[in-house]
Length: 222
Figure 1 (cartoon, rainbow, N blue to C red):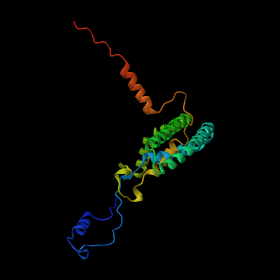
Figure 2: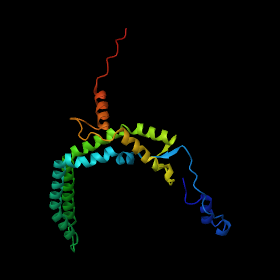
Figure 3: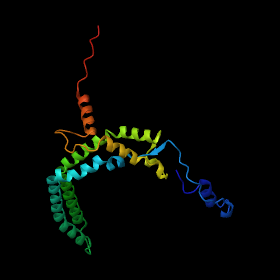
Figure 4: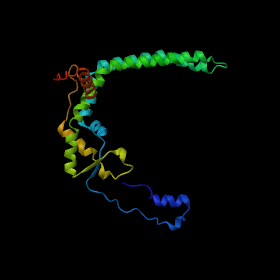
């Protein structure tokens, strides 16, 4: 990891403890790569995998009807909102604008936007489920791919990019894991089975069902 400047140097400059001429300024030494450490971003790895990229392309054809329907509805809503936005802007620039009327117009616009977005989301729900299904299939292979990449690179510690300020490219493990993912799952199933739900929803439903089950009757005391 590389920092832009040592803290001691920054402190000396800020406090005036020593003139610049008294501070040792030299060219940085050659980067020292610490073995056994890697940086990996699971979300980026999944998105860069062949299975995900292939599914993104295939989905445009498989779900073309839903996508076209949603885009058409989006255009209709935009056309409906355009005169409302124009009127709101014109009324707000009046010499003595009616604040209550402006608030009502803004609320109407917001309601149309929200209901329209909810309608579009319903149209695209099969598309969203397909993407979630593909991501889950790939994610199920992520640990195995990570382990394989770590073994090949002799990595014992993997760090998230969010925990790193700066690092040499040599630490980047993403492509190594992507290569292993492509070997383990070159393609994913695009269309989920009927009734399929993402893992988080399945776990939530199972927890709710378990909570609703009546507790087993305690044995009668003698």
